[in-house]
Length: 280
Image (cartoon, rainbow, N blue to C red; front, side, top):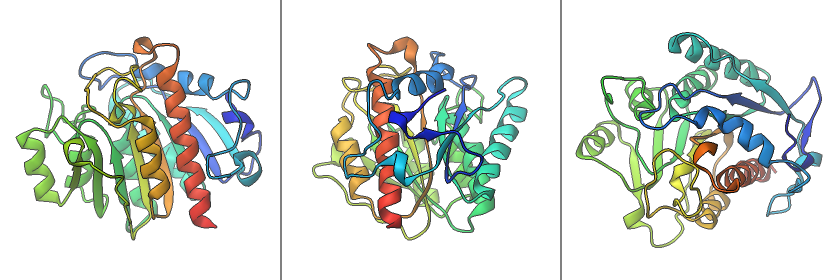
């Protein structure tokens, strides 16, 4: 299905598990993010890239990384969300690291619900152009524009830090203040922030955190974002125990020459490499 430069193995035992969620029924504008997992897998081929991260982690040698395929996304969305939560929890119960491929950003809500059952204290680092803190969008409380509102309201995590924001409304700011969410907006980024987390950390990376010049394959183009290099530098500078991640909102129908899917692969590999380095 995929190999991430040759790092993916076939094994019944594993410490890292890839899980696709080809779901975009909660997208508020263009559909196409459901094709994201397939596109990211295709871009990860060892015919194009190798298994090494920039800081010298060999993901083939230093992980037992498997691909568990895709969650069944047929049926009513609450059923889908329940399957997502159960699938992620099964990975966590094996003390493995879930690497979740979206899909639209609504999937992060059931993913984090699974993490909240495993970890008493959890922090979230959220890369995005948008805060995803709407109480509802077009009457939908489970829209891809709402997952962090639900996560915060339900007290699923202790701390949320959002990076790359450049489409923030007054409603978002009010919600962030009410729940102690830290927003690092693009207008305020002069130097690479060094982010430290005391609790286990979940990283949710909406690919539109990157400027459209670096990630054109998204449903909502928002100019003025992070470069791929800036995002990687923030990841490299992290001081945290990373326990899981998702990369969402890759829309290959809007992509050019697979640029966005390739960026997603790079981000995943560098986050996983950082995870391994911090364990060392």
